[in-house]
Length: 288
Image (cartoon, rainbow, N blue to C red; front, side):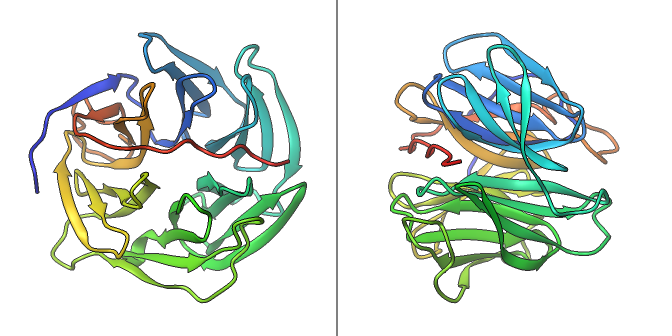
């Protein structure tokens, strides 16, 4: 594992920071505290973090326009106005209240992929859904803890994991609709001697997959063929999901979580910047 320079980019100590969204239309990062029922936003060049409190548990977001994002929550998809803080429900999830949303990301087609799981982590398995042009459909069933949802820039490949399995899968997708069109195969099988489990991921401009390893204090980088390129040591025990920031998207951060830690450090739960060179990509716009 490589030691590199890191810093706290946003110092809110969240219970379960997740779902960081690079909002290139606003030059900001938007992310969630699932357990805290809140969404946060911070400009790439600013020093102020704004907080939006919600009556539901949010977990992921997608860009709609310069002012609005689509939030996936425990019970629905809802629009959040980042100027006024107002919300409006778009569609409810066909899940019971024992379930919640987890990791999610927008496919290059504009389809929003979102995973669901049991709130206590031990109930019935969830699924990965696809929300596209007003329709919600199930893509993958029997997922205990859906994570690592991300896509190749051309929309032909999707990645995801069921975190306890320690496997990141890849599957072919239709570039125009975000639907699965073939069988999945193993992209990454986490070594048995590696601490932690795969959490959220993002793909860079060179096709490399960057994965935050929950419980492993690590940001791992895998090449387009699934080979491990680098592992960077982080000052948090439970990193959750990486995202690109900066005017050129040439910086990378990861959200993290304090939940269930017996002796959390000051940095646990914060957004951490890793000072290494990257070539990020813009997130697609959601097609409602």
